[in-house]
Length: 260
Image (tube, rainbow, N blue to C red; front, side, top):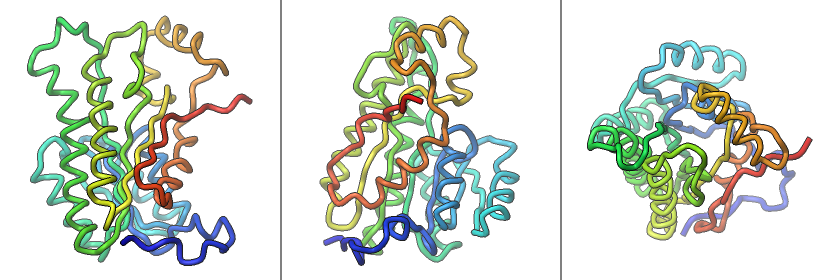
């Protein structure tokens, strides 16, 4: 069985420390992913920043490494296919000598009327948001099982449980719902050697959201009680909390944006 916290009575900030741990983050080169990498580094972890096509990934890794005094390396990979992400995860474990946490954060979104999807546009979303999560999880799970412990955190979305309006994005919503249920399945199946949790953010001020037409943003804000979009940095502590949860089947249902 998984071990519990070594000392449950230790000071709370000590319990949040990741000093000496290795964390891998897919989609780590922008938006939420960059802030997750930052948050893990702030907690003392060495971090593998996994990216697909960003030109800033290497520079971000170097900057954070210097800023926080930990080892941060960038790895180019493709979560859509089993072999490249498996090879990457294995290489990370070899380079760092261990792998404690994997955060499956890579995701994409597009707007289509459901009747307009074709095989290519449907697969473009699902191959990253669902298949990519599974291939990442599988690669991590093999290492965690061999080690006897590990933590997997999946970035889902409030779109997993609600239908966004006024835009239509059935593929995105369905892929996030699938990823969330996959998370629950793995949490039960892997309970003897890994903790598996998910985080479901609402609208976050990333390029995925900010590049949308102003009329969409106005509509979204009209439906948010606090009247603002969350910042990516507000997620980093939520992801950290997922790693210490002893309730392995409990999912964090949604990010609640505080009223300020």
